[in-house]
Length: 115
Image 1 (cartoon, rainbow, N blue to C red):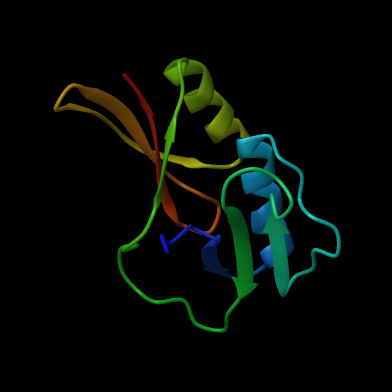
Image 2: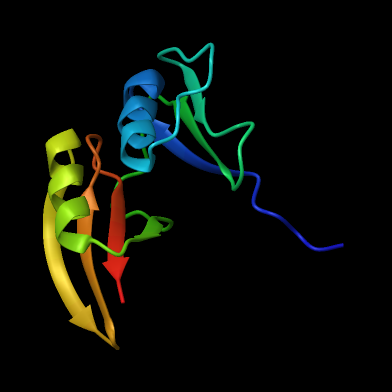
């Protein structure tokens, strides 16, 4: 039996707030009953669920897991991510792929790429 991705989990300080950022970025709703301790995005939709859990102490250092998102409009999505509260970290063009790295409002890294 093959494995499927069930959740992509974020340790965070405020689950509802961070879920709100990711819900806007992904254009998906925050699931009902979200609160500061636990929230999800996309639990009943297609694809993996984004799950946010409040923790007292995040693991220090670089993320070992991050999301790679894809778009046909990198400049537009770059501007949109920053307007939603992401921090623009850098722009890259390597191996035939162009992407921008961001940090979400709690410092979790993610990339948006275009071919």
